[in-house]
Structures are given as C-alpha cells and as structure tokens.
Image 1 (cartoon, one colour):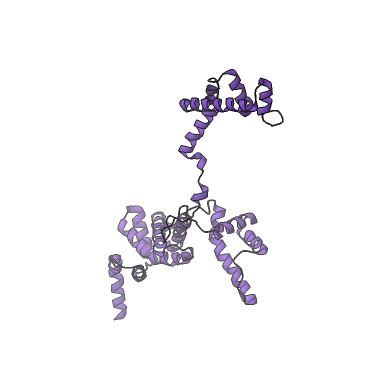
Image 2 (cartoon, helix red, strand yellow; image 1 turned 60 degrees about the vertical axis):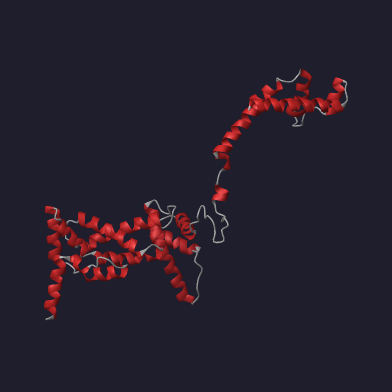
Length: 313
C-alpha cells in the first residue's frame, strides 16, 4: 500500500512539480520542499533532455531543473563561510543550473547531475567574487583558484597543527605553509602572500556618516579627498597664478620708477645665492634719504599695488 502511495505521489509531483513547493515561506520551507521533489530516472532524464533539445519543450526543461534543485541547495552550503545570504547563494546556483540544462547534451553519456555541478559552482563563484568585497579580490584564473582554496587549506593547516600539539595556532600562514600552498596550487608564493593579505583585510566605509551619538564619524574620506582638485580650489589657484604674473606686472606699471625699484628690490629680487634683495639701509644710502623714508615709500607703493590688484582681479 505504501509503495503505491509513493508511486502516486511521484507521478503527481512529476506531472506538476510545483505542487510540492510552497508559494510563500522562509528558506527552510523552500529547502524542505525541494528535497521532496522526485528524482528523475536516467530514462526520464534522457527523454526530457531530448524533448528540450529537439523540440524546445520548456515543460521538459522545467522538470529537469526542478529535479536538481536539491543539488543546488547542497552545493550552496559549501559556501556559507563567506558571510553571504544562503538564499542568494541558492538563487545564483539555480541560475547556473538553468544554464546547464540549456546546454546539456543527452548523447554524451553523462548524467545531468555531473554536468550541472560545474555550472552551479561557476555561477556561485562569480557571485561571491562580485559581492564578497566592494573591491575585487580576484580577477585572473589563478587568483580565483587561490581565493576559493586559500580558506579551506588554511583551516586544514590549523586543524593538523591542533591535532599535533593540542594548541590553537595563529591565523596567518607560516613560510612553510605558503610554500606548500604555492606548490599544490601551482602559483607563485608571492601570489599566495598577496591573496592572504587581501583576505585578511576587511572593507572600510569611505564615509561612515553620523555615529549613534550624532557626531560625525571619522572615515577614509577625511584624508583621502584631494583638496587640490576641488573645483573651487582649482579656480582660486588659477586666480592666484594670474595675479602672481600678469597682475603683479600690471600693478608695478602703476608705480613711479623709484617706488617700483624699491618694491622690486625688497620683494621680487633674489640673488644667485638665494638671499633677498637690498635692505632699507642700502636703498636709503643709494637715494640719499633715511631708512624710514624708504619704508614709507615702500608702504605707499604696496598700498597702491594692492588697489591695482583688486581692480585687476
């Protein structure tokens, strides 16, 4: 009686697999539902795959996908250590499963489960690499291999050491472990060190914003911002450059020859040894007046120049 009931449930689920999947519910309900979906026999799988390939039968494709949803759940559990939502990992794995079903060739002599594993893992890997960090930690094929093997190999090293002496070891790799990992993964030891450094550093918010007490939190944006490239600063810098060249020349033309020479000697002239121009007393001796008089002429000239510069700006 029970075998007849099981066969009947299998037939109902195969005819309408969604009948055992709840329309709403949490992740546990979804996992429980897909684990109740019937597995296809090799003959059924071949039949549905040929219908999809030869006739474009989407219903057959749906049955192939649904019967392998539990495989996606199983594979996705292997990647929970990256801190990403399990539901998202399953969703990305399902995308990989659908790609596998679309490309599956029933005449190759392999079961869909073996073929689909590659596509499911590839899609989950891509999702992890894009979302585990804001900044990409792996771009080349060798770096991707390092990324997904480094964590598991590190755990293996720590477990072996703990069994050997019963102590908890540090999280960083030793020189011998780096050499072993580089040799087994066929990469340079420098690449192992670089990936270890990338994985050990966490993401930092560029601009944390206000803290719980209402005060602005200090973040990298405070010291990474290039004030020199800020638009207002650029405009002001250009204005200073113009005033320091054309503006000064225009302002000097407003002075009489004596005042101009005094200003140039006091502020614009530089000797070959890097020292400044003439002193008040030297200019006073040249013009036969007191140093105080030279200072007064200089002050009046500077006032006149400031007025000319203001007009020029």
